[in-house]
Image 1 (cartoon, rainbow, N blue to C red):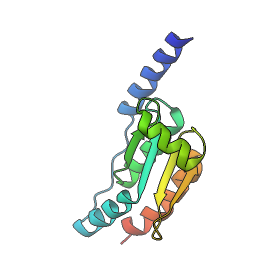
Image 2 (cartoon, rainbow, N blue to C red):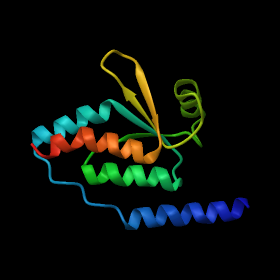
Image 3 (cartoon, rainbow, N blue to C red):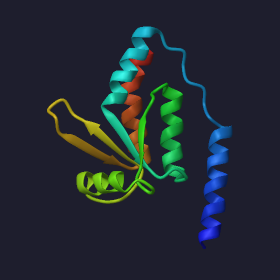
Length: 125
C-alpha cells in the first residue's frame, strides 16, 4: 500500500507542476497588498494531498504567495496544527486575526472561498 501511495503522490505532484495556472499581472500596490495578505495566512498541508494542491493552485491563480508548512514531514508544523486547529487534517489555513488570535479553517472549498474573498478586491483595484 505504501508503494501505491508513493506512486500516486508523485503523479499528483507532476500533474500539479504541469498544470500551474498563471498569476495575474499585478502592479506594485497590488503586489504589496497581496504580500500583506500572505503574511496573515499560513497553509498547513501535505505536499501530495490533492485537496492541498487545489488550494495551492487557487492561490497561484490569485497571485497570492502562500506560506506553507508541511504537516507530514515537519513535526513542529504538525504539533502547531494539532494544538492550534485541534486536529491533524489538511488542508488547514491559519488566519492571523487583527486581535492577535488565530483562526483555523479546514476544507479546501472554504479556504479557496476565503482567499478569493480577500484577494479579489485587491486584483480588481
